[in-house]
Every structure is written in structure tokens, then in C-alpha cells.
Length: 308
Image (cartoon, helix red, strand yellow):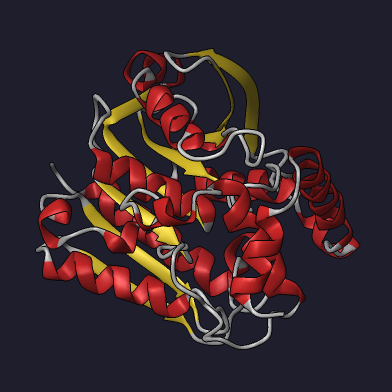
């Protein structure tokens, strides 16, 4: 089946059918995680602390995990807002929490890991607006957790990178990050990633996720759905941005394209492709994840150390 035909098929599905597909996708994700990988998720249980909270915002109640390193509990810490991946559809999981534990421990920061609302129950722009509303109350929250809001950084994985990139571009928050790290983000949700070829199983999942997030196909060319559709003028003045891609990922070219657009707009941008890695490697703990972990934590330390 080709992409156009697949999207037309999706358009004919009822809301209940779409929800059933999404629920089944969420159930199947757990089966894809190996037991030895699951065991790794608890390696930093003694070195970090996680507080599960529901914060009241202008959007509503937002579910957030606050992650801190016990080695830095008495220090004023830089702040990271993390947004997990999963095609705007899959739920926050232990692997996302373990990624945040690693960042808190290795980079010495307090991480607000936001469990934003999911599609198709909450399609575009719900997740963007929820994240914006949460960031707008961060200054008052940070004091409780010894967070230094002047050293705020965004770190987004896959769809989370897309969402945080959109938040940054929209400029609707009361605070601006010193930098953003976007890991293998989908930046173009309009064009065909598969160049007219038949969709394999992963390709169909990708198309489902995109459809769940935005069923109005033409709206996908909006610059906050497809951040690579932004103009140079819209990108000017954005904070420092690091774009990370995986060479074995169909999203790799569009991630590089977005990085080049940022550079053209005069945004201080770094681009790094982990050639021998698949999508999601930093969180899923495969391929070059250890190298990726080191690279991301060093980026964070660099941004935290710069006087703004």
C-alpha cells in the first residue's frame, strides 16, 4: 500500500476505530522492550529521586515527573523540560523516566519530564498548548525544587522534539530557554518520507501516528506542525539549537534540513548525525546510545555554563 492510499483509508475510519488502533499500538510497545533493557531502567534508583505531580495550569491539570539527582540536592540547579517521543500517540514510559534520571545525574540538573496529552484523543494543537501552559508556571515552581529558571533548557525526543521546537517558535511562553536539544525530531509531517515506495510495518505506524496527531492533511504544512516549513524570518532570534539525528532513520534528512534552515536564519546551531543508529536510540538503549548519552549531557553542561 502506498502512502496516499493509506491516508485515504485512515480518513474512512470512525473515531472508535482510530482509538482502538491507538490503544493496541500502546499495548504492543511494551512487548518490544527486552527484559535486560527493562532491568537497566532502575540502575539510578538510588542516585536520583522522582516526584510524580499534577500541576494546575491555564490549560488544566498537567502530569509531570520531577527528576533530581541526590548528589546535587542542596545546589541551585539548571532546569530541563523534557518531552518524550512516541509519535504524539504512545504513552510516557519507564524508558523515558530512565533517560531523565541519566540526564539529572550526569548533567546535574532538575528535569521536568512532561507527560503531555496524546492523540488521537487530543489532536493538534492540544499537546503544544499544554506544554506552553506548563512552562508558563515554571518560574513559580522552580523555587521549590532549587531550579534556576535563568538556565532553562528544552530536550525533546522524536515527537517531543517536534512539540518543543513548535513551542519555541511560537514564542508564547513567559520564559525562553537558553537552548534546545531536539533528538531525531519529525520536522516535516506533510511530505512522504518513503519516496513513493510501499509502506512497511514501521511506515504504516508512522503514518497512523501522523494521522492521529492531525487529521486535516493540509494543516500539516503549518509551521508548528511541520517545523521545517518555517520561514527564515520566523526562525530568526531563536535560542541555540542542537539537532541530533540517526543515520538509519527515515527522519534523518528532514532533521538535517531543519538544522540548515536554523543556520540560514542566523541561529547558533549544531548538527550531529549518529550514522549507525536507528530512531530513538538514546532512549531505547540500542546502537550508539552510550555515545549519544555522553554527547547530550556534554551539550547540556555547555549550555548551562554560558552566561546569558
